[in-house]
Length: 386
Image 1 (cartoon, helix red, strand yellow):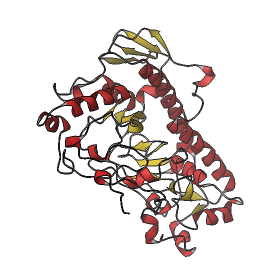
Image 2: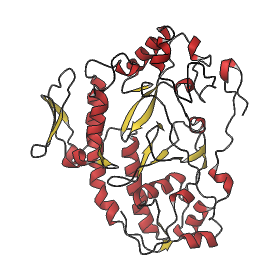
Image 3: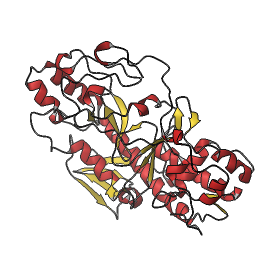
């Protein structure tokens, strides 16, 4: 992590004051690495008779087949009780299921114990969700363009409203930074600096040094681009790319890394080059590539459950995702030394921000904004009153 000469760095919780606890599904089957599996699971649920439907659903204290709930903001799932539900599966959406692992979710409020509607209301193509991890080893913060559902860390949207309106930043922070830096940083610049410099305990040292700020922000934007995987597919140094060197089996069950040959073995299938930094990359002490692979090949689901409905063969899209993930992790690993060498000097302290009136933040900044600009359907087709 960046070194700093003081212990009065402001906390992320003050710089980005609005945060939301993570989504809690309550059951695993509404998510999967492929959308077709979710549609098959939904079909099995709605075609089942009571009481089989209830067993398949896996009821909890928050959700049963008789729960009456509203639609998720921006989604068009039904609102009749699941005991009577028929018809096709609501169109699955992409979510961040685990670190660097985008999967699919059935966006139906009736299936989710705690869905956090306030996050769904601000999710759009310009939003960036910041997710706190459980700590080292690995990055302290992740960034995602899609809704995160991974636990246990809190979620901090960069913007409090859709269309990148009203940044989720301490009021006055941008102006205070502009006074010292000689230019007005954007909310995305502040986020880039934050993911680059955040320290254990989620303190974020700030600087009034324009050159240092510029270097940190440039590095942070690179980190954000890799984490969000927006735009062009990244390449390894020298233009290298990992390729499938030996065909992958129909459904590989073992994963092994050969460090000397920089080769990833999926049973008898082979992918290379896979730099050591990619294989060693961890988030909260868990190796990302292993967790990603296990979520697509594990046979731990109990027979007869909806979770047991899963692909019987390896999906071609998974190969493409894996090749890109290998590259992303390798490039992020290469950026770590630069992040660690970024020494924060001429700091802007919490005491200074308090003297300037930036801190403490007003209580309203810790609550969601009122963003309801259209009707949301409530239980049994009634309009939701918010």
